[in-house]
Amino acid sequence: MPLRVAIVGCGKTADMHVQGIQRLATARVIAVCDREPLMAEQLAVRYRLPKSYSDFDKLLAIEKPDVVHIATPPQSHFSLAMQALDSGCHLLVEKPLGLDANEAARVIAQSERRSRKLTVGYTYYFDSAARMLRTLVAQGAVGEPVHLESFFGYNLKGAFGPSILADQNHWVRKLPGKLFHNLLDHLLNQVTEFLTDEKPLVQAHSWQNAAYSGDLPDELRVTIVGRQKSGNLISAYATLSAGVRPVQHFLRFYGTKSTAYLDFDSSTITFDRPSTLPGVLSRLESPFVQGWQYIREGGKNAFRFARSDYHFFSGFHYLLAQFYDSIVNDEPVPIPYCEILRTARVVDEVVRQIGSPQMANQ
Image (cartoon, rainbow, N blue to C red; front, side, top):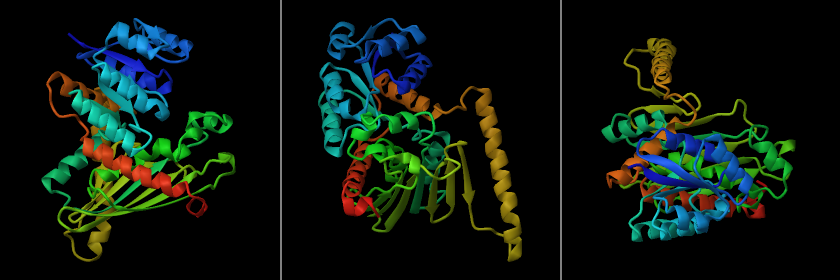
């Protein structure tokens, strides 16, 4: 019998959750909830869902769902998560898990006490390129990580930006780290997976470049240095930019054997490896090697497109499938809790630094 799923928070992100769940044989959405009744009703009508609520307590008491998805603003994640866990529900929470690492740790601890599964909606964590890199690292094919470069671009003139800029009371503006706070998980979870030091050195600088950003800082640079279990140091450089065009999202993994470039916009992974050809022939070879790799990646994505698996939310759908399998088969959750907490701690430090006037203006 499919798991009974409830979704709380019926904004734009909720559509992604409903669509992902409807692809699964192991789950079905039985109710949605939003403090604004019309939002919940409209979501239910769009996807022909049985029930809509404006009271989460009432939903939990009447529907008794097996799983709850929380897609509300981050300020409410902690309280809603604890309610759902206390009602015996497994839990998927949109990023960030909590407003800070303390809230995240308390939610994780409660899920373990209640023997419930928990995960976070890291959209790109299971992109096909990210999964490939994870496999190659485990096999030792790219060597040990030496440096990581994570880049996340955001268009404040895009689908979500104008509403943030126009509304002085928008929930994004009330986050401790404002716009950055809502995006940092996307930028950092690609790094903290490999930078396993629990107390790395973090330096953050933020500023505002664009006139249309109003009072919101729109550029962020973060440098992280930590020590691996081997004792070797590893560094990372993370960039969040609202000004760079075209908008990009990528990760460079600099390893001891090769460098991997993951493009999350096109869902491709390519490599730079030492050439075996002598002298100038190695330079002549390079563009052909790169070109062939992109042809190969394009072919893979064409095949995925033919199977309806090449789309913006494919990584999220993979996460959903893994999460529900972990519930049904009582297997480990898809994202280790230690990585979620490691990301949360780095976010805390970044937010602390950019919140101080002397750092924010640099």
